[in-house]
Length: 470
Image (cartoon, rainbow, N blue to C red; front, side):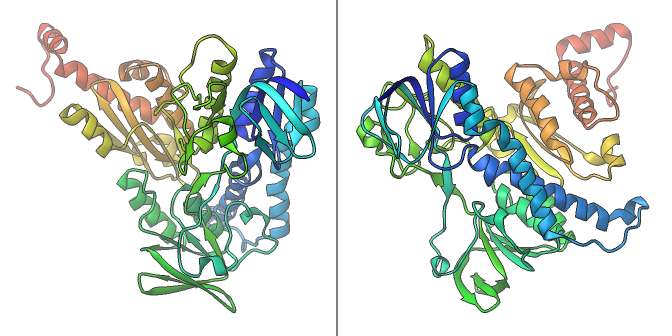
């Protein structure tokens, strides 16, 4: 029987960060993974999807190069080579996290199904019983299939097996227009697969303007978005036929991207005294479960479904488990990005949510990417939308080719209460997308100053009058 300071269950993004941090602290650490180290992010999520999106972007740029004065011959897709590219990136990112390399870092790695014996003991298949002072559970989540007649009778895809297709489908029906669904819809359409995307609306968790822009973009690139509810699925000789509010659509393959649920089956959480529901493991603000020495984080607690949030939570959970005092492991200040073209990034509440909180104090400013010089040179479209109260940022949505990079500056400002006048006064390299944010910050800060008492006094003393006033 082996005894540890902490056992980390699940070796995805959160588990790897948690195990490595605990090891750096000098703790004796065991990392238990039922399948493959790296989790969904490495094998079936972030990494393969972004590699596929990059290949699709290359095809799209080649096909549409004439708009830049660059003419190309017909674009062809070598599916075998594309798959080698995607899986090559997976293996590159996986390499530093093999069991052998993690062992060299001082982490004991155990591969196999596991279940709790008690709040101090864990049984791991083929390895016996491990004991510990603390547990960190970060087992992630798995795809949810909607309750639709006929769905379970057809061979459908999820993100778990989408990146293992040996043959490129000629047509693809995607159910679910959230981040994964829209990313894959655009990517496969650009690769030459005819895509039909089905959901009640696009990007239901984003600002309404995002859905309008992205639907227009998808249709322009040849994709088909169908607004409605899936009512039935049947298998046909050429693939599948789905019915949506009385309309029928056919496709060679079907991808279901309709949400995820915590992966808790088989853990025997009851034996450890850990409370949970269908939404996930219940935790307090320090990520401690109902069992005092058991912590949980990431997708399995039903929080934001992002690997970067799960990793941040793992850091906080390990800190609370191994060091004096308790850190805070929950926050709503979480930036995220959907890697469509253009990218869609957000931090903070939607405008409608912010208005419920702040009422008439909330101010909203939007600029189009057609006013940002770098975006103009890139022939990009999109916008920056800032929610603010005076010079304090409340939230933001960015739609642009590099929205994912730009949203981080906004999140940093919000986290550290950096006001818009400070952003405006910081020199930004030109021409970059972030100069659009600087331009907005300058306009908002100037208006706030001029509308204030001090600004009015200074203008009067200077013999100046605010534009628009007599």
